[in-house]
Image 1 (cartoon, rainbow, N blue to C red):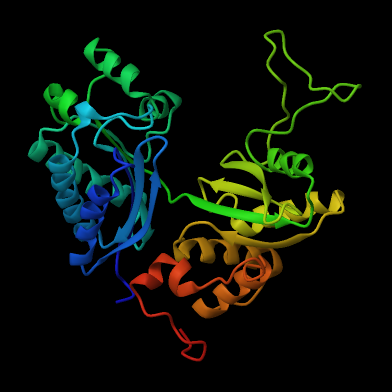
Image 2: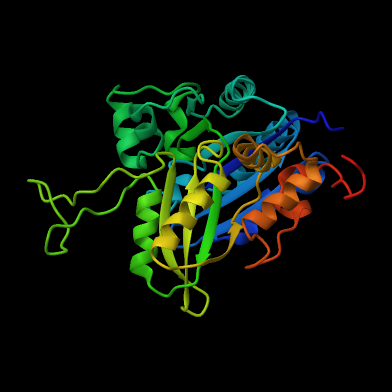
Length: 352
């Protein structure tokens, strides 16, 4: 059972107001033994819903076909009212490896799914394998519906699979393969949001604002604020007030959990907080994570500190202690680690 393959899927669906329709779609997960529903988040303002699943690849892709069929029967995209967050009924689909499957393997399985999906529903699809990461492809993936349609109609870009004949009826489907994105936050014992944002800017790819001798932001000739280079190019970061307002938190979006690992990111945050005489009181994962996130982080520490090899339970316990994961909310491996939604979590004395 430990050799089970797992992937995750994040789906943006063009319905955020009629929850009954969304429930009819997500309830299809109940009939799949090897798929779990990780999260459902309604965005009524933009009229879309984010649905996250994980499971055995063939079962996940079979379920997606059923979900698409149900969605196309319930939702009328030509009657859609919302902002530009979606480009179709089955709008944006991100597939990520979780366990015992590589990005290349994910590419091939996802490509097969997209071809079948496009053929069955005559759906226009854009497909982006993981190795396609240049700025122009990323821009297409994030393009608004009107500009995307205009570019297709002008022949500036072409769909990867399917026909544009149903654009009005169902819109486009954007599918990409991407390394699993981790959402992680640290909580600071400080109410000063400006300091927290400076730390966030320093750690993330955005970089800290460069100030002149008067303490005002420097600008270029076009009036754009100048920033120093951020420490981690694969991390986005933003600060918020937390709890009663006496604390702040920095939320990180890690696009590559191996570079930096969460421990490397945490250590960098500790150093910057120390300079500001601020303590990190705890941290938490804001989404379920693959066990690979844990093993990559612990391995990173092991290379530096020459720690002995740790079993699964020891690795998790090390991470939760190191990152203070239980200080601002209990960290539950059976819930927070995707692998253990499918595999029994080993007991501490099992020697796993």
